[in-house]
Amino acid sequence: MDTGDTEQRGTAAEQRKGYAKGQARRQAIVDEALELFSRTGYRNSSMREIARRVGLTQSGLMHHFADKEELFAEVLHQRDETVRGAAGEPAEHTLIDQAGKVVAHNQSSRGLASLYAIVSAEASDPEHPLHDEFVDRYRSAADRAGDLLRRAQEAGEVRTDLDPDLAGRLISAVMDGIQLQWLLDESVDMVPLFEEFVRGYFLPSDAPEESPAAEA
Image (tube, rainbow, N blue to C red; front, top):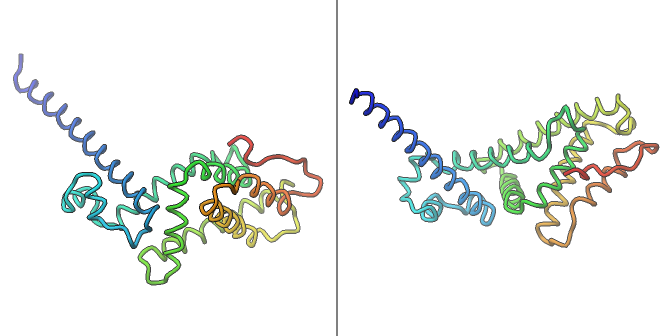
């Protein structure tokens, strides 16, 4: 037996094991950061507290994430991936369907919903480190929604007399508004509220009644 090959295989296995362990620790950090950010916000959360929660020193935590902004970016990225998965592929669902599915998903994910509500409010301060990020997120979402609504108008799926650019902004405004009410009072059911908004504002008067979140 070639001892060199054996050593190489052993080293590769150890590297894979070490990588998997590192990824698990990294995810544990993200999970704890999500919980803390969603409870206390971005500004009031410290890397020291997150490190304590996962049993690391602050320098050990910074081996995985250089600073709080990088850690929050990963938390937000994972949140976005979860939301995209809930919405489904654009080719398979209309914009209204996707939005309805996201509303239903958010109602089952209080931590993520709370995180977004708290940090987006904090980011309204122009001096907040995430201010520009959230301005761009809302602007980009509105632009995409406006484009999709124009196509939906051409297909006869939504009213032709509404302004798609204004309506694109209204979708996220309504979603955020009812989400805040739900976070304050869990007796609020976001899904029928959003469905009522869709029925009353978007659908043509001759459209069959349909629940946009029924399949969520």
